[in-house]
Image 1: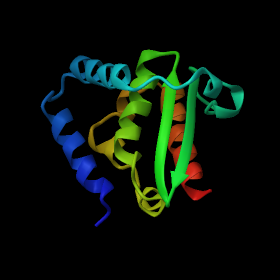
Image 2: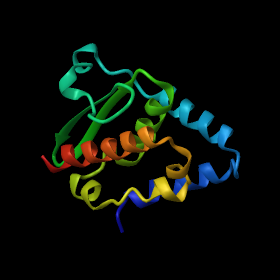
Image 3: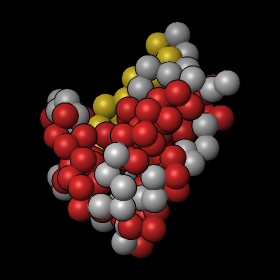
Image 4: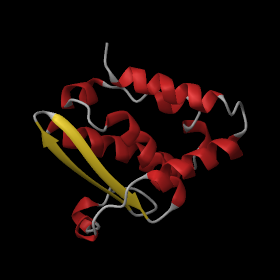
Length: 136
């Protein structure tokens, strides 16, 4: 089994604690973003920007022995929380596992239907960039 699935289940369980309270879920996502370590200013450049995001979201990755380490930041609270959520899943994972992972957690926690179309598009582009880094 893909080791990311264990992390996915932990996050699904955490979101389940909030029931249908989307204000609480958004607050949790914002808290995840606040816990995300800052990235150095040198990575807040256009070549690290995720294309198609309404807000500015930067993502950088390093691969060591086929294990991925991602770094991210955003100038907006919700996108920063969303990228932090995604990085909880993929940081320190093998690139093969990241490429095989389907990110179905987004639907399972109900996030997809609670995002504006532009944020949903940004989320798709975040996932694409995460996978692209894992592929290189």
